Image (cartoon, rainbow, N blue to C red; front, side):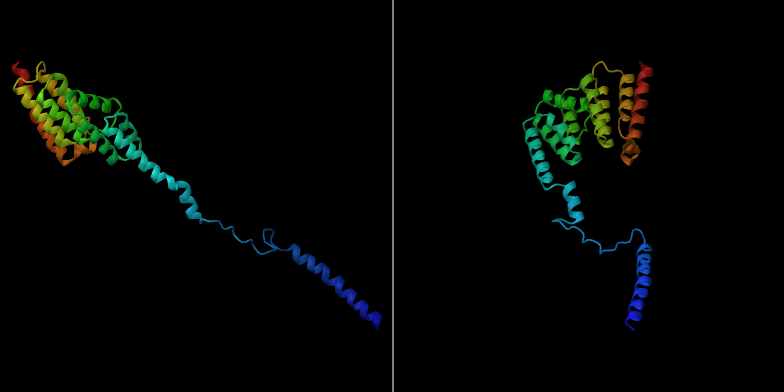
Length: 228
């Protein structure tokens, strides 16, 4: 009887063990036999960690410090602050720095030096700088200052302001205040600087009015050319 019991147990073991090995081998290769590990947790979430990497806490303070320094340098007349302000990529702040430098340029020579620095470094021209140069030009219009003023006003990309400059230059020319400038030269100057304006400005409502004014000025100058 005991022999039969041991024989039965032996047969069961022999049958069960191969079945267990077969079940283990048929599991999917990528299936985990153990529970997945807990995700690692740090002081920051993924989003917080990313934002921290892109915008470190010191960045805003550093940027603010840089702007304050540039504003102070502009207040002392340091023109090099202008190029650094442009590098920040903030046009509004750039214009503030340029306007401060324009305000400090209290005489014609300083203003012309600022205008020269801006154009030489291919920097944007603010309306205030253009208006300041126009005001200085009106006090003493010459061949050179007329060309410079028209060019800088066009660089300001303001159709209305450019039109006002054209009209003033035409009045000065009629009165003989701009010496050694022929009708042909003035017409070429008006038309040439018009193309300095951006396409958007030329196509605007103010740009349309400007075109009509230039057409009128062209007819007047061409008539003067035929007379002479």
